[in-house]
Image (cartoon, rainbow, N blue to C red; front, side, top):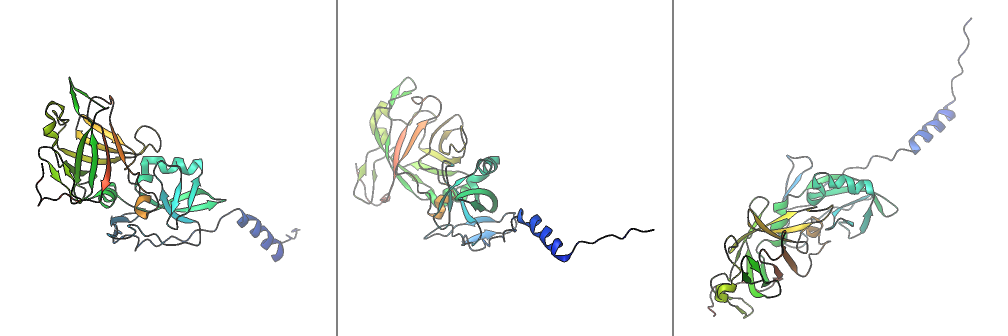
Length: 292
């Protein structure tokens, strides 16, 4: 004799389904980033920003009604959204974005709970050279450099005026530059005349591998997690570093401004090479005016 099987009612099935689904978040619709940059390649996953906008906000993120869209600010303390909100990140999110230092070149779609980012999905890659080009390409940096004191030592208490001009665009992941006043005085469009470093005689900081040619690169999490440094390369065996001018992806969203000055200390032994303190100048090098 077969025992009849009692089937659950429709109401019971509905109740069980509701309980099961209550613990699952609805899938987030992917954000369209096709207009986030002036030029985007969709041949990669996620898409790649090849050229940000030249004027105004460089990376323009869409609004979303679910979660948030943004990037990690310099130093890793906050997640900054395209709308300007600054959010904390859970430990698990901080760990995930540190893998391969992906945070330094990524825009994310984030899930947010009680003001904290709880999960992220990369939706746009912004290569390091693209970030450097938009943030610092063509810049004129003006400030001071430490003089040579002899016996392979630099005088960190002394200073000489310096002008650094940066190329308009990066080559690969590096932005090349030149110390404009290495051998000749330089006139700036604001009327300033900056003397040549060579005029300092034995104090000229450009000794040996420290030449007028230099390169800049971004080095995220250089020593510790989120220790983001902009590195000044003099030679393969010598470099300086400073965090103030490290441009983050959020910087291109107008949400993570650079510091007012870039303080560059020599890697390793601070007195083994030139140190610099420079700021971005609004003046240009005036090649049509001589000065001395």
